Image 1 (cartoon, rainbow, N blue to C red):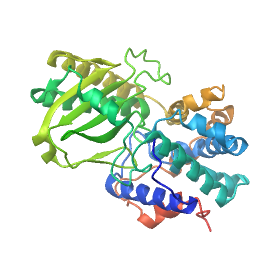
Image 2 (image 1 turned 45 degrees about the vertical axis):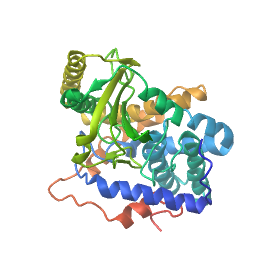
Image 3 (image 1 turned 60 degrees about the vertical axis):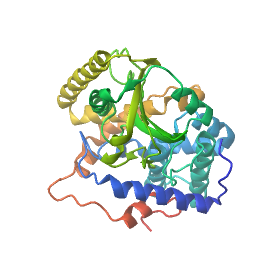
Image 4 (image 1 turned 120 degrees about the horizontal axis):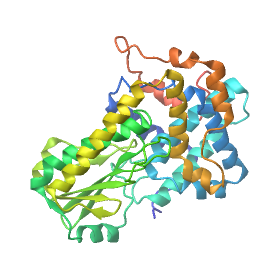
Length: 358
């Protein structure tokens, strides 16, 4: 889809770090629910990263085919930094044999896959994540089932309730099931889409009847809105002055009345409340296990391509039993003293060209 970007592997790494740091600068997040980075992924990050890298090394072309089954937002924020850090951990502490250049090549390969998925910068350095073609955008704008701007408040409530539900099934740091794409400009209008996926996650015994919900927002001019590396939409409140209409697609079927929108919103508000109550009753060990399963489930299409079970390997469960709460306690945040690390720290942490400990 995208053939205009030509980069050296090192140039790709520089773009990746630039996009990553820019997103982290804007996040401003210091407290995570119900656990923080390291409390859970320390138990499986190196295992998963080595598994992925070995598939890449064995057959890069087959690896790219498998990666292409994962959406762009997964590959950026939930794949690249995680896997690079996991490989560094495996090399530094498990004596896994991997070179800096091999990690650079892995980043470049993910970039190649992203380049084929989007018609914008693969790492969103242009402020866009364009996964629809121009014809697909025109087709969507030509559809008839739209809700006018009198629905704005109720649609925003639905958006908040759906995001809360995603956090309740994916957890804060693994909330891969909600992301934005766009902005798409067509005939003087702007279309941006907020997508909610895997609502029926098999990780939880919830028997969810919905799978995917999209909210399409249309503005009557070309507005200033950007999508970053982490899949966040960045905009000012002024854009709502130009809001024209929206469409809510529930598993592809449009909602046609404010009562239908309210019904879906109330449904997921209740579901997320039930999930939060369930999570509050879980032990740290149960949260660690569930966190690992959520992350592996996110990559299930990748593993299914290889005809493998998506669930974490027995090594993960053995570690939780053997290590206990070692890393849960070690990486627990004290929000009264937490300080966001400097950009140089994150750059060194996620750069494939160093060992971090050097």
